[in-house]
Image (spheres, rainbow, N blue to C red):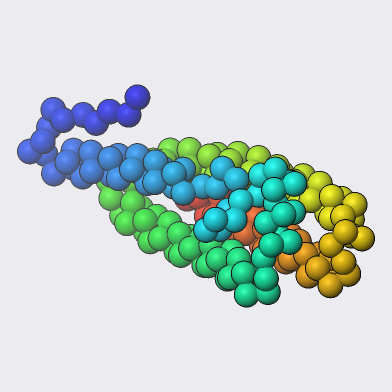
Length: 178
């Protein structure tokens, strides 16, 4: 349980410490809330490979471009979060006891980022592999044009997920360096 001492509310150092603790706790909760439990962009969801394959087959080129833009936007959001972390580090470093608080808060957040993203991306890659196999099985049924478009979409998703994973690794590194 996260608690904050309130015995010395009139003490400015204690008030600052309490505010930093509360802020660190809120930061961790917010960060964990935004971590992907599964890869998704708008209504697109990497879950069951058969559903994923049908979603990809049903998408047209504009839908695939929109999906790629959503995934690229997610990378931008992560880059922005890394910048926010750097700013928070500077603020916490100057505060009394801030470095210790930052180490604890950012350490916990780093563990959460690494664990959740590792599991989510491992599962997503497994489903993408199954989707590619299912696509090969349906090649004759869907035709060469749709096969090529869907294969390209799968390759794009893999590349974007790899880029997002690399960005999340940078985020974890930023949380670790204090």
